Image (cartoon, rainbow, N blue to C red; front, side):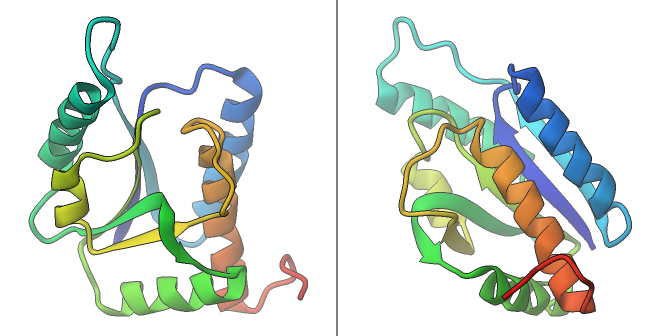
Length: 156
């Protein structure tokens, strides 16, 4: 199984990129992992709804029918790190070819993507930029694997 982290727009802050890269390298020991970036939609003359619709279409185009698709959404299920690890294990046990986690653009997700999604999780009740959430999620994914393997990283 391959884990894909699908995001909208490039990470334009070097310190964020370094954090993401650190945990991407650590994840290689546990799973096949790839971060895929979809170009963001330039929205000078577009409404937030139009931008969401265009980004949603691009994200949906990337997905394959058999993908397990999980949105990182502020209204998603709130999980502790241990509960996320348990949930990740259940998703992996279902043996999808690809497990795809998606972070939308600055305006969130289009309704079509909500309909396609197999689930939603929230990393916090707080709102973060769509770039800031990237290193947080990659670290939590790494943390989940260390929990599942009983390794020393997570402290309860």
